[in-house]
Amino acid sequence: MGKVATGLSMSLDGFVAGLNDGPGLPLGEGGERLFAWYSGGDTEYRLAGTEMVFMVSPQSAELLREAHSKMGAFVTGRRTFEIANGWGGSPPLGVPTFVVTHTVPQERVYEGSPFAFVTDGVESAVEQAKAVADDKDVAVGAASIAQQCITTGLLDEIHVDLVPVLLGGGVRLFDHLGTGPIELQHTRVVEAPGVIHLTFCVVR
Image (tube, rainbow, N blue to C red; front, side, top):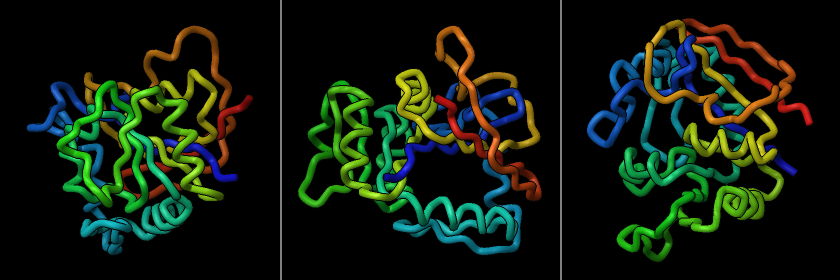
């Protein structure tokens, strides 16, 4: 059985997007700084299932290759889906993608689509994603979906690509988690130019 894992680039003060993020400014004000490490290296990395090519450090390329090879399905939120304009019909990991939403956008529904729209909550979306992923991992994208997975006990692993910048405002990754500590176990650190890759497992 694979893991349910989230992985996002984050500023030192905890933001995964800057202020005023939206379709016209997907990463918010200053948010592009969180992804500078994707173009700051000399090693080519092609994102599976897409035409996107990044130039990262060898350390980051190895970590991305390992993480992405384990992913069998992707769960995200409707807002992220719309901000990304549905990734042009090609989800970022090239795997079946489950979008948590209140209503199904019928214009986005077509035969052979890699997207499934789930209207009965994040738990259902993760369950469906696990069934498709089989023994591979389920990737959880979007801060709000990651937060719901943490509070409902669905998340197994947290990957943070920590970027040395203070955004000062925007979308926080660890927000709306209620009260009481959530124990994590630190399992890996990969230092690379412009970013530190951190991995934690959620202790239950």
